[in-house]
Length: 565
Image (tube, rainbow, N blue to C red; front, side, top):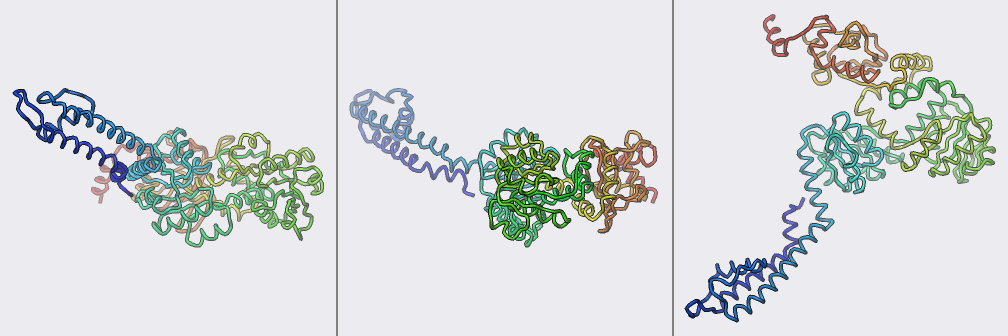
C-alpha cells in the first residue's frame, strides 16, 4: 500500500516547487539590490536577513523595513515579492485543499485507517464481505454475543449506515471490492485472530472469488459463502468451502417439510427461528395438491422436494418452454382469477407465489385467498424494501433470502452441533418429532427456544473438565440443575451427545460425562445462561454435585492435590 505521505507529497509537488522558486528568487533579489544604511553608505542585505524579511512579508504580517529604510529599488522588489508570494501561497493552499477533498485520496486515508484498526484487533473476529440485509443481521448478532467483526462492502452508503446501527462494539469497515485479494489481506484475512470469512454479497461471482482467495491465502480458515446458483454451489464445494448457503434450496426444503412432515417442520422451526410458530399451527396443515406459481429456481426446488414426498403439484408459469411436456401445467402468471381456477385453486391445499416480482407475488396470494380462504400461502419476497407490506400480508410463510441465510450462518457459528442434530431429525419419523416438540413446548412455553452446544474441555467447560481431572463423576443431569437451588431443574434438556464421533439423540440424563464429549441443549434463554455459569465456575459445579461450598482457589486446589499425592 502506498504511503499516504508519499502520495501527498507527490500531489503537492508543483505547489511546493512554485513556493520554493518564488522564495529563492525573492531572497536572491534582496541580496543583490543595493541599499543604504543610516550613514548613507551602500549596503547589501545578507541571505539571513533577506530570508527573514521575505518570510514575514510573504505571510502579509508586515513588520516593516529592516534593518534600514529601503531604497526605491528595494521597495519595488518588495512589491513584486509580495504579489508573487501571495499568489504562490493561494495556489499552494488551494491545491492542498483539493487534494484532501479528492475521492481517491479520501479512499487512501480510509484504507490506511482501516488497516490500522484491523491490525489493532487482538481478539477473534469474522471477516464479513457484504453488508446488506444478511450481512447487517449477522454482524449485529455477532456483536451482541461479544464477537468482533470486520466489514467490507462495495457500497459506501452501506458502510455509512453501519455507523448509524448503534452497535455496542466498533466495527472496522471499508468500502472496496472484496473480490480483490489485496483488499481481503488488508481486511485481516491472514491475521491470526481471524476465525472465518463470510462471503455474503449479492453476486455469486464475487462470493466465489472471495472464497477461492480465502482458501488459497489461508487454507485452514473457515469460509461460509452465499450462493444462488447450482453451478456456483458446485464450484464452491469443489475446493472445500466449509458452508454453502442457498436460500432457494433451503427454503424449498423448509416449505416441503411443512407440507408433508408438520411435526419435524416445527422442531426445525423452533431450533432455527427465534420467533417460532405456535404448536397449534400444526393442525391447520392438510395434505393434498399444491399450486406453484413461477417455475424459476425457487419454484423448481420446491417442486423437487415436494414430489420426493409424493405431493401432487400444479405449475403456473408464463413461459411456454418452461412447462412444455408438464402434465396439468397452466400458462400464465397466476395474478388472474381465471388462471388460478384453471389450476384448480378451489380444491388445492396450498399455493406458492415464487416469481421474481414482489407485486405479482402479493397479487397472486390475494386473488387465491379470495377463491379459497383455507389455502396455506407461501410468498417469495425479493426486495427488502417491501418488508412492511409482506409482514402485513397475513401469509403463512414469507421467503426472505437475507434472513434465511443469516439464520443458517448464525446457527452454524453459535451452535455447531445444531446442523448435526437437524440431519438426525430428518431421519426420524413424525411420532418421534411429535414427542420432541411436545417436550420443547412444555419446557419453554411461548418463549423463544435457545440452543447451545459445549465441548468438555478447558475452553468451553473448564469447571467440568477440572472436576473430571480430579476423578469426580459428573452426570448430565447435574448440568441441568439450578445453581441457586440444586433441588430445582433448569428449563432446558439435552438434545444430543456426541462422543468419539458417535451421535446419541436425546441422551439419558444419568449419562456420565467424559472429556471431549460434545453436548447440544435447548431451553429458555435464562436457563442457558445459568447452565453456562455451571460449566465455567468450579465452585458452582462443586456446590451442585456435593451441596457444599468450595471456597478454594484454583492454586489452592492444585497445591492440595499435590499434597494428597
